[in-house]
Length: 351
Image (cartoon, rainbow, N blue to C red; front, top):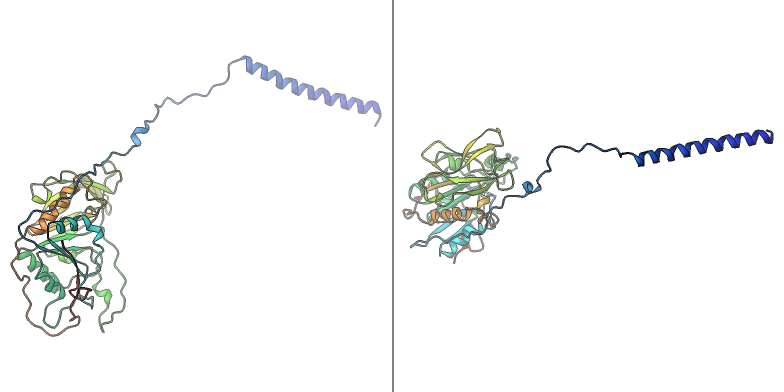
């Protein structure tokens, strides 16, 4: 290529560069002299972040001890794999013990199957004869007929019975039994709820839990309950808090004492008013155990409810010796006596 041709190409390229730079600079001058383009702002009002703050639930109450002239014995059943512990109901235990009452956590016989002894009785019924109140919650295995009959006779004789249930669980798988011909799975409850005990008093528990998406204790599963009627159990418990409470349905003489309004049932999504606690004389059934815990016992009016439950348990007037000892029958498995470190099959908590 000749030198003149090379020079021509260089000059042409330089001119092109100058034109591009000049056009860009000119555009910048024009944009700088004119109005900057603007983006349209939304007309919606600013969101008030204060609406995100939770509504405080009072928690400054205190569970009070029941005032009674007699010192009673309250038995908490643990012999059926019950999904509840002393820690789960410590405020209730403390209230009872501080009043001089005795609380026993009954572990049952060594066989663990709740079968009758050779005398025709059962370890549970034997324990109930010396008790004034009985608490059953979330059993993993069913109560047999002798035990259910004994609990019914206990209540009919004036003994107080507190039945507690949480959300139903799936049936446990069957496993081999150490007793020939008996599968331990045969005694496993399909729900984990004390259905056959409650059913004897015309009470059943729902299969789902109650929830409220609008008016709740800062979580849709933490619902409010309110007093129904003028029963002593609900006196002063105008606003209570329950966690995943199950509805309690009555078909007998039991009547609601606490209910949740405008809530929905998880299993059906059906909205309405549901009873969460019912009472039939000496029997009280509540579709929640959490309200007794240290975490919940002082929320809203829960401390009044727990105090009322404590009074309910120790203000009965049970006939001595009930349930009566059954007549001797054919010997059956499980005849051993309850065994524990104290030799009585129960862990005592007394003042």
